Image (cartoon, rainbow, N blue to C red; front, side, top):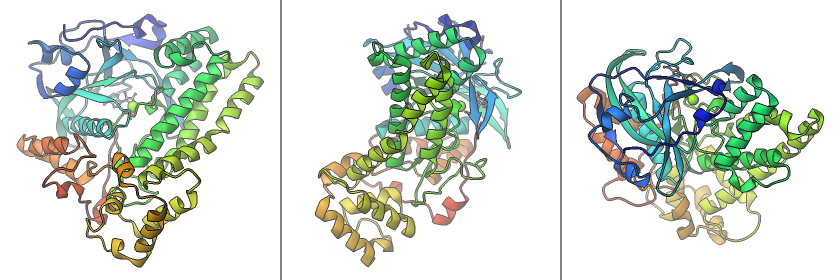
Length: 468
Ligand code: AMP
Ligand code: MG
């Protein structure tokens, strides 16, 4: 058996999903298979693997999940428009993982879309998910990319593919929005209990269980965004349907890593006003959590006014919690192990970064190993003084090496790798990138090129896209 399926979502209210039989794929071919992940999750290989991974051969009933979401601030009914939950796989250790196909064709939630995914965008998602996991950030994982032999019409005609995505679950803030707006209070209670049982067992016995649940989700999502900030990750489309309830980063569409430090950085082509820019990720998280809080109002207290008051009390803690975690993370990045408040020197450092627009990743490496990078800002008087000041309180190399990656996938290198595949059918560059980010904290020989940011002009023009 390839998967050890034991499906629970299908036992929930029938309005929460639709059973879908995937369209048969002619001659599916596995382009990339993540053998390490297969081993980690106790997924067995067999001769039918391609047929199973593309949904031709079914081991259980696939479903498309219903959800809603606030997209760029506007409420919309959504659902898996180009994805299917193949089943819930249980590892030998008893951990449950959703095995989801992305790009597997239309579903009742496709809303006029074609249900497909291009090979370029799935290669991108594969690489980002590997990078994020290797950077030790809880994220969706990619098991395989399957070639579908179908054409997909985007700006130009591209080859189609299916990504096999693995997550602890695909339940989102948007799923709660859907359940809360479309179902009775009893159904919302049942669904919330299901989610608590699945992801928050630690609070099962709390007196005010649903309120505690809200706070736990808030904490996990704060941790998630702090981790993004640690490595300069910009998600790019923090709509509430892309916010996983369990704090797993997912949906690597218009995301990108920031090179030159500028809090206003955004790459998404449709994000005209920078709603999801690097610096706005904090505020948008609070906005999204407020939408989440609204969905729970009916079940926190029998009196809505009390519910709102209780939820607000927790939301009011957001800023303090976020800042505390942010400065704690930045202390580690700067190798400060002393107890105490170092917020002002941390702010001074990020102000310097912003003023000089130096490479975010490389500046921390430069602090560990001086004169590694040929950026003239690093020989400026201001930087030398800042370094001296920091060395008096921190710059502990052992701490810094654990949290500051040597390598992040550079946007232009990802584009080059994808374009090499599209033009020459070669995964050589792609596989090299994968190898480099296998352990981004470990120095690799002859790899300076992977630490080289693009010209700033490239980054200023660089655009990423949704739904490709
Ligand atoms: P995303 O921006 O990837 O989070 O997608 C937002 C919504 O649009 C989700 O409900 C997707 O399932 C849906 N969607 C994205 N691309 C397509 C497509 N090509 N066909 C159908 N639905 C899609
Ligand atoms: Mg999405």
